[in-house]
Image 1: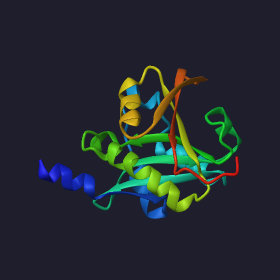
Image 2: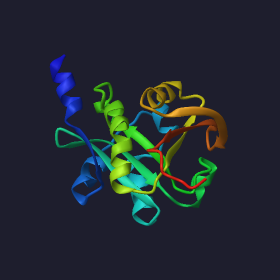
Image 3: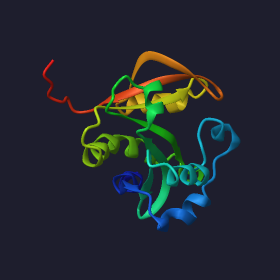
Amino acid sequence: MSQHTDQRSQTKLVFYQTEHKTALEAFHLPDTQKQFTGMPKEMLQIALEDKHRFPVVIVANGNPVGFFVLYDGEERFEYSDHANSLVLRAFSINYYEQGNGYAKAALRQLKDFVELHFLEVEEIALAVNLQNPCARHVYLSCGFIDNGRTKMGRNGLQHILVMPMKTKRSCH
């Protein structure tokens, strides 16, 4: 049991570096999960060609175990009304690493990671497919909120979940 906890405590978020490429290309997800996310190899290629996409690797004990993209382009307004928002996209944990608590460990670090690297961000948003209740539960248990907003995705209806950041001072 303590080994399980130690593994999670060694989880960290880092921006993609070329040293992660081989592990991300070997990433495996079963078809039942692929329908809800993009594979790191493809998502990484898109991200490296788009200045609004920031690929992030979830590293545990020095090894890449997960991946996601933070996005600040115009499509973010499909997810959030905040001008200073980011969208969390293509979040996944390598199938062979699932069940070790890495997803929750990463999501619990997300707010601090974003506050450190994206100073003006007021909200992180994501879309999770209605047919993916396990993922929705994980996001909700790690600080995301469901305000009842939905959008149609490539594989059906999606819940829009948001994570508010630190309250910013305003003159309203």
